[in-house]
Length: 496
Image 1 (cartoon, rainbow, N blue to C red):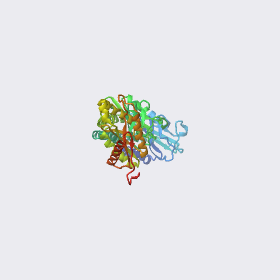
Image 2 (image 1 turned 60 degrees about the vertical axis):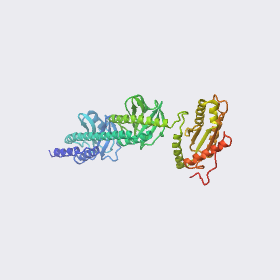
Image 3 (image 1 turned 180 degrees about the vertical axis):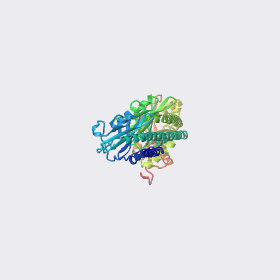
Image 4 (image 1 turned 90 degrees about the horizontal axis):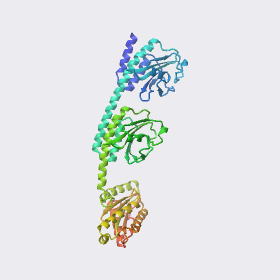
């Protein structure tokens, strides 16, 4: 009777906390102090993989313990499978025994159960033959019932806390999605919020562009394999299958199977959720983790809620971005307008200053364009403007910018450019226009161009535009159909 009273107090102590780690430590402490066991461990059941995972132990510091056992594997797994205690007084005579502690001679495995469902196993080992008597086995079995309830309470409490964090994350994402309209800023903030609230080491957002998905943003601690902007075939990656399905996808896989389409070096498990807005799949929310079995079915629903909010916000931000682009486009030629040029020249100057590289401004003008309009009509003049714009775009790099500055004048921005290269580009454009056959125009069409390079001819917007304009004016005075650069300003240096 006294032993039962002490055991009751021990059970109450285990039930008095809702922290899972603390519950496990109290179970081990009671097994060690009350039952005088110096070799005991608790394995919890992973419901998805049906494996018993080693969570806490004492007396096994140097043991070669398997972190995971399948249900039915070893004496511990057999107890979980049969849902009843298994006692082996001499492990040397039992084929099920898996040696983890070389000195073990007897083993007792008691399933931890809640409503006839196994939640784990209490595994007790001894270096003495037939160490456990009938009374000890009965008392440990009784204690295991209380320990099972404590573990279940702690798991439910942890799940409630996790759901509360997830609800907070959903609200935070919703607030950010309402407040932020810049697409790239929105994607970055959403990745950070999800990473802080869900069980993942890395969060990524990939957006669909026709038959590809593009890695647009990510946040976390894993080592990236794919750089930002990486493109993947929409039908080519395992996690892309959700683009054609309605639900999320959870994957646990060996590292060797992740070489194809891998985003992060340490990924072992991942969850993919589609971003859907009004029936249209916009992309993928991808969570990666270096732990096996990191995600469960319970994670899918809250993440789908986050994904729905994100998809609507991405759609809105995309619309805003398109409106901005339309505001920056010239209606006649389809290239950027002067408003966009004013924004980009400041950005290019700042970038050139930060990285100590050159950049150039080219001001180009169609020679005698008024006469061309008078001779051939404004409709044909408009077509010449469109074709010159097209020639410029074809001849320049993707990182360069072509703008219609006004009337028949164009402004071009060349990134990471030296004076010699800028002059060569200006000449290439001049020759391309001169050689082009403009339908309906019975005489050659030519351009004049003036060039200014940062920092040689200026370090500010006004200085560079003024220098390029002056050179354009000089090219006109010199007879047109030519390109002119100019000498560096007095005192200018490449490092400025």
